[in-house]
Image (cartoon, rainbow, N blue to C red):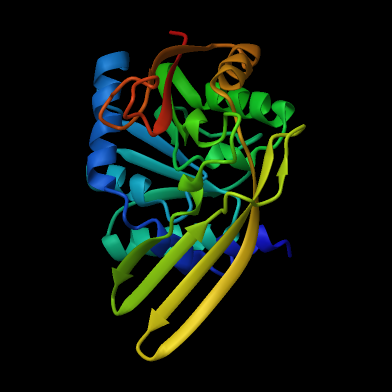
Length: 265
């Protein structure tokens, strides 16, 4: 098994803990707000793609929406099902590839967060992904994509040291320190592939464990994302933000690139 796959299978619990710092309630509220602004109504059905632990899908379910979560990892899918059962909510979990998935019924909102499109390594995969999302959306539905900001990887100097700053999360007696990528990790400039060194440092009671892996991620420029959506057809960009507060992507405080696309009515 490739080491990058271990992050989403053998270490699914650690991955979920590593990203537990996200303010899921606030981010879902932002997604709902954008749906009101750009689609005219709150979503009745929402799909989280590359969902991992599916925290956002779970929150949509808590709010009464029909919630779906799609992930390629069977381990992540089982975890999402268990979390939904424990929370007493219904989430439809699909173990499928976000490149070419199909839904039985369309959704009003689809979203891919935490730069998960970086797991698509070629333009053909990205175009196919957008086409699959288009077919999954009801007419007028929205697709929201959160990406790394171009400032993290474009420029004439070394790769931004921001990728190598560790962060720490504590929960249920476990302290996890995560490092995702180093400035001098191998980089393929022709294919725009970054081989990120990932390290989980786990402290539990008196035990210590360190888990290492490499995750290969594609750096997508904003124009590549726009081109792929146009080539797929049927999706129109209606906004591009630099953070979840709705700041401009080219503003001085922008740290993400968040696209909002709308399917043609």
